[in-house]
Image (cartoon, rainbow, N blue to C red):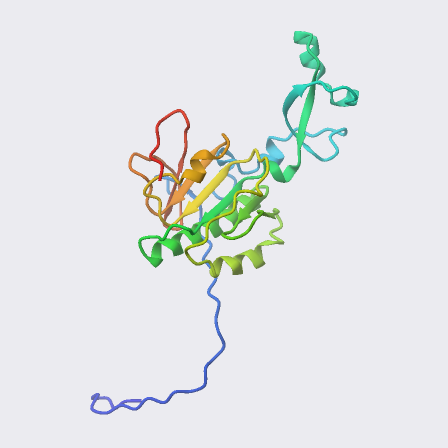
Length: 245
């Protein structure tokens, strides 16, 4: 309380109010330089919808996704033999299947490296949240948070999202993502960090797959593919030299 002239003032402290949890804002995912919203169906080129678009299912697949061919193994059902290869090359091959969740995109939030400021970490968290919602709606996604041993699947109905949204609001720096429990995955990988002066070693060593580094500031020479929540994403290519942190 103070008088209009500011000559005197008095402050009265009341009891503490309830704590508020501010959730990361969900922002649109846009193609870099295009300005258009890419989150409403234009994410297929980033690996979104891979579970439904890249998987050719049939009545004999037991709900699994086709992940290529491998040499025929004794005892494999005839329904899994790839007859076209046998007719073309005279070689017995069988279809290889993976679980649908293994073909979904994976988002890894790396909070181990301290960002330049809190704004950079906030941007990385918002980018993670925005990518989660966009990719989940496009067909499903998995999220690996700092400290977790296994990623959590988020289906298109976003049933698992509210709990993960709250956990994202509490992310702090200093915790490395655990990659030991990832297992074989074929979907695109999005590595989100608040500090990326160079490509993290863990990301550079991961098996070959579509990989994207997402950060407020990308390494020199990077070409941004998408923009989201103050961050940009660049695709990593093993055929060219990259700076590794």
